Length: 315
Image (tube, rainbow, N blue to C red):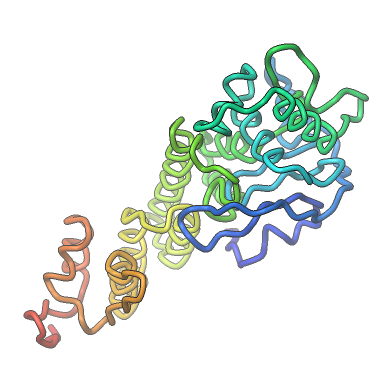
């Protein structure tokens, strides 16, 4: 059975979490973390690698959407503490103090007391594990999160590596929005290539599952999967091409026109611009999109391309 992803599903699990912001745009913006709860009674799964990385740890750092730190003992009240935890979670083998400080403040040299206070505040917020150890252990000259801290990104990678389409569906269900949304600084995920890797992996899995569903004649669910990919990467035309194919597979010519109109509105809209209607698509409009997208649209559309300023003729 295929599961769709209604809005708000991620918030329905009942797990307390510390969430940073919300995102309806491509890039996150600075916001303060909001406390959504402090109790998180989840046992650590059996470790399967030398790092002791559980599927879901006592603390779970979620970056596949607005950033959340689930299971922390206390609110993150000091600026940059959530950013520090996220950075460490994405560098699981540890980093030097100079490395994380440069990543968070690339254009500033922060005073040692500021760095110490940031680390101490993050350690207090994360709290201790069930075994009594700090989730952010003390060590000289470097930082590394304990094995009781997991990430949704590593879970997604494991599911994406599977050959079972059911795992692909589970992986995509983890995606909640634009990766890393809500961080105070978006520089390091971009400069280190992590944001691109995460986004590309999500899109690749969405394409893989949608292709699988189309091969089985299930256009409706293929479109749902493509839409899920767009949650993470709203401008990826590979996903729009899948939506076009899915509409055609369902015998829905209006859906083909609506999807193309939506894409053209997305790529052509300036800050006060308007979205082209489905009846306004002409050859020059399709020049705005990738040639593969334009060629697929004209192959599937039941309308002849209009001359500039003209109207459509039905086939």
